[in-house]
Length: 471
Ligand SMILES: Cc1cc2nc3c(=O)[nH]c(=O)nc-3n(C[C@H](O)[C@H](O)[C@H](O)COP(=O)(O)OP(=O)(O)OC[C@H]3O[C@@H](n4cnc5c(N)ncnc54)[C@H](O)[C@@H]3O)c2cc1C
Image (cartoon, rainbow, N blue to C red):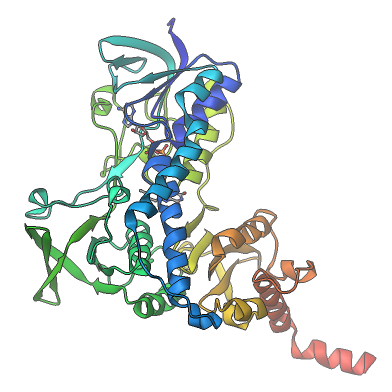
């Protein structure tokens, strides 16, 4: 079949942009379709605005806590409008990199339109149709709005609207204690708002190692973030600006009222209008597109990447999957996606970073042998920085090799690649003992853990032998 393009990419977020530039770089004729903003969620409503906002929020926390550092600074006023202007200015600074103009310079034809799939090669754009040999669906995800009675009659915020707030709420109530709710909730608390996070689970950070919650619960309590756990939202209503959320906890009803309500109760794939059923593109029960490890869907010329495929909804995963789509879609061969060594970081204060297997996950798969933990508070630099909340946990597989790591600490997201590299290189827990770390750094925690491991592995008979032979 003769087509207008080698590849049509639907969605210009992290996944779609990576596929489009990669395919154009290989010489393919590429069309990229975006129905909203170039750069997708990460640039406009996700990573970039949230991390910019959190930088200000966490600085506010340090100012409020300045006495810890022997200063008496005062957080006089929080002008949220200015905070959000800074957020927008950082987005504007990054925007040109993801812009239509830049992609056109890379040789990609960009259409700012709603894409509808007509058949496995044809995309409808307004009143015109374009055809592609390969189609890549990279349409991302949107905040899931749970079917709570009354919610449709209430002004609530999502990640798409919260960065438009101009005034600091007195009391921000958050439905959903996943990474988005936790990061933003703690951030607003640091700026001075009262914050209540409602979640139906009995603990948060459920995908991380269990020790994470033990640390982070204390942190949230100390910060004054109110947690309503094992709380099921029954209904929501609004009078003037005040929103009232009725929750059920242990058979009792509790009313929680606030002047702002954020819904961060999970994500749903953006697939409406794509006619996936009609085309025979298989999805899972939540509607996420199912792909094989070459990112191919159940239709052989249609690929998918990024949040729309479900499992790990991170920008780096969108980029990783897109990197598998490019060779597989253009050349017909290329690498296979694997999800065993996925890093993630929750950008709370302290950060929670993870790579590879958690202990419960490894135990479930029967590949767990041992784990080691070292507390951050024992590291000299952490004492100097007063960053005492946290730890490093290394997970060892059956052959004693590193298969996972969890790090909680102010700089955890920046340090976790040390573990990623050691895991990728098939190293053991002693790996960091022979590396010279600058003193004093928080990264020394890796070396201290290696020393602990070596001490632990040193058996009594070895000590006796040394005593006999050398002492
Ligand atoms: C508040 C928040 C904070 C986050 N922080 C982080 C973080 O710190 N680190 C991290 O790794 N991840 C983070 N994420 C997740 C990250 O934003 C996503 O994983 C990433 O954006 C997924 O990229 P994507 O390309 O799959 O989808 P998207 O970025 O959502 O892009 C999809 C694009 O497709 C477009 N589209 C949809 N349907 C159509 C259609 N029919 N026709 C044409 N275009 C269409 C959409 O408008 C969108 O622009 C965060 C997310 C949120 C919400």
